[in-house]
Structures are given as structure tokens and as C-alpha cells.
Length: 465
Image (cartoon, rainbow, N blue to C red; front, top):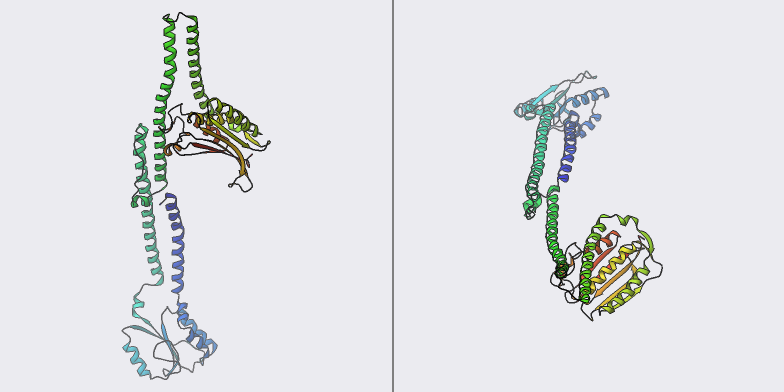
């Protein structure tokens, strides 16, 4: 249970339990009042108005009833011979009785009841009216109502204190246990042991103890795994970039040493050697600039300065250039740009062109001669926005495709796919594409099957334009 939920339950208990207890005490006091006995014998009390007594005398009897405790039975006799009113079983109103028999009845039941006889001062002094009440001996020995209430209040306070203490201990243990696990594991991770797992036990007992801290532990474990993956990719990248940089450097070094040793006597051979060295230097420069540009792209807040401009010409220029380039590299490039001439979208033209070029270069790299590359752009309804539309851009090839396990990671920096796609480049091109697309507020996805080519789809919402 979450700590927040536990605290809410505790707070509700702290507020609600005293209120319920107070209501219970008030109800107990109300039910314990002497007047409540009138509810038990309301028919007899109501029939008191029919007694052959004056209004003042009836009032006197009602006052006597109000002073009696609950569950008291009574009988009103005239001259100890006639029953005027009775709540004692066996005696009915207007019955005639023998006083000797009644006293014998009182004697026989005295073990179970206390009897009290009252002769109230009445207005009609000529009549001998006796009020006899009885109460159970068990009730008599009970403590009075106030003592009972005090005892109940004391029991409640003790129970409530125990409830609060137990709840606080439970929450404290939950927090302490979770923090202890988190502290020990994060200490190892801080020391560089990224293989240390932070996963919380998934059995039923531990699942019930899930809270914000255990959720934090799980999130930290995800971060640990991400750091570990990044560390592994970084190591692979360093090895890859070292290899990529070493190749042109080795060529340059070899040719320069040959030149310094006087290996080339012919001027024409010397020019060819210098041309090769120059091309390798350009290759090195391109690789270094790619790295620098990627770092700049992730550190600059250029996306805050995007301005609306016509995007259709960019698609058309890219499509025309791709068809020409495809012919040079012996690829069958087909383009279809079905967009109106004036569609304005906030975007950075140079970076968007770079995105399209990276995707096309990717398609060229992973296709063979006479393979096909399809480029299309069109407009359609945006199902996520009732009144909105979006531009769909697709670039699809018939190359070697991308393995399933690589599709979720190909946009990560330094990641280079498995053997299903050739290990070329530095693993930055698609990461750059993802960075640019996300910064514009667009989305990109990939669909591919090994051996069946790959399709990259960019969605550009127009509602936000």
C-alpha cells in the first residue's frame, strides 16, 4: 500500500473515530435517560389521561415517572384494591386485586426485584392512591450512567492510542525497510557497480508492501539499466570510432612516411599520393564535424526560435535531389510529393534538410544495386485532433531490413545495429534524426522485417502550426 494512502487512512481514522465515539457516548447518554422509559410504556402513560384523577394529580404521577431510571415497571393502585395503571406483567388496568395477594406476590419476587412504594401528595385527599415501582436487582448493582460513560471513554482512549501507535509503527517500518534496501543498493551503484540490481521482490507479500519508495527503487533500477546500456554503447562507440579514425590516420601516416623516405620520384605519383592524403583528411574532418554538430544539436535551444515557413518546396527539392543521387548509386528512386504549394509549418529548414538527407543516406547504405527506394509525402486527417490534419512523410527501401531487437534502439546515440545491417558509420545519424524530429514536436517511427527492407515515417501535425 502506498505511503500516501496509509497516511490518508490514518488521518481519516484520527478525525472520524473521535466523532463516532462522541456520537456513541451522546446516544448512550440519551438512551440511558429516565425519560426513555416513557417510550417503553407510552401506551400506559398516554392512558393516564383517562384516569379518574385531576390534571394536577396526573402531572404529579408523570413527574414521578420522569425521575425513574430506565426499565422500571410500575403499578398505580387505589385503596390497594383497584389497578388504575400497570406495566407489571400479570396486572391489567381496572383489575381488582386483594392486597394480601399482592403483598405475597411482592414477597415471592423480592429476590429478583427491589420494590418501592410512594404515596404522592394529591389534590384529591380523600382517595388513597399508591404508586409502586420495581427494578431488577441486577440493574441496581450496576454503576450509574456517568460511571459507565467514563469507563467507555477510557476504553476508547486506550484503544485509540493503541491504534495510532500501531499504525505509526507500521508506516515507520515500511519506510525504514524500503529506505534500507534503497540505501544499500544505491551505495554500490555509486561505487560504479552498475550490475547491482535494485529490483524489489515480486512475491505476493512484497507486492502488498509496494509504496512510493519501492516505486522509486524500481525507477532507479531502470535508470541503472539505462546507464549500463549507455556505458556499453559508449564503450562500443569508442572502439568503433577509434577503428574508424585509425583507418584514415594509418593511410595518411603510411603515405607521408613513404614521401619522407623519398619513395616517390615521379611528380605524377606524388600528386596522386597527395590527393589520397587530402581525401583521407577530408574524411577525418567530416567524422569530427559530425560529432561536434551532434553535441551542438543537443546543447542548443534552437527549437525555441522556430518560425513558420513553407515546407512543400523542401520536400520537392529533396525528392528531386534523391532521384538524381539514386541514379548515380544505381538505385531505383521513386518520389511522390502530393502536397499543396503553401503549407506553412514552424521548422528549421537546414536541420530538416539534414534529417531527410540522413534518412536517404541510411537507405542508400543498406540497399544494393538495383534495389528500390520510395519517397512520398501527403496530407491526411489527424485522428488525435478532431479538427486537425498532419503531413505524412515516408521513405521506404527494399534493402536488408532491421532486426526486431534493433528497432527500439536504432535511434539511440552510438548504437549500431546487429549483423542484420552492416556495421558502418558511428551510430549518430539516426540519433540526430530523432533529436531534430522530437525538438520540432513531431514523431518518427520505423517498420521493418529482416530481408524485406525498412520504412521510416515522420508525422508532422498541422494543428500546431
